[in-house]
View 1 (tube, helix red, strand yellow):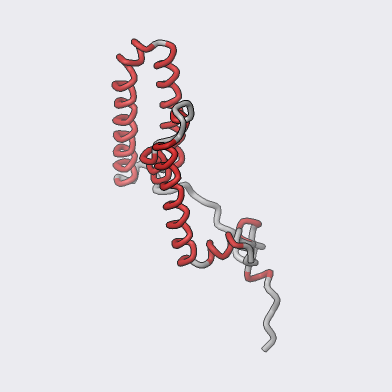
View 2 (tube, rainbow, N blue to C red):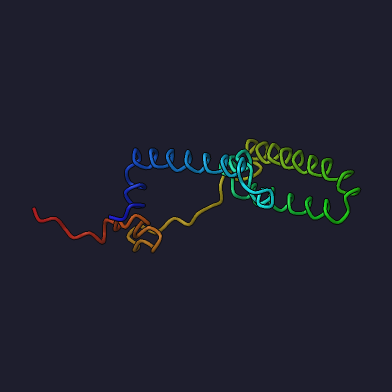
Length: 150
């Protein structure tokens, strides 16, 4: 069994390996930030920003990246405009996203908006689809296993 499959199946191994990898990455980033040459320092991400990107969902990480790229472009091309607008505009986007989250939660609570998208339910007796036939761990669907003699 490949190593990654063992990590996915055995939760204890996965947690232990995750802690080790995280500790080594954190240590490496702190050491790089401290002793890297001055020319390389602008390209080394800060450990706190990496922590945030691991914790928050992917869509938010992408939004933060795009916003940061736009802010950096403005800072380099039009420093006065960046100084005057980046902080208020980014704060406004954060507040807008939070307010939309509250609005969606209220719409779901008052049953104006469905809780989750509707999914097609397979007919009784229908063959399982490819998504249901096997998993990424290589465990075949029950219908694909050989019958056990009794």
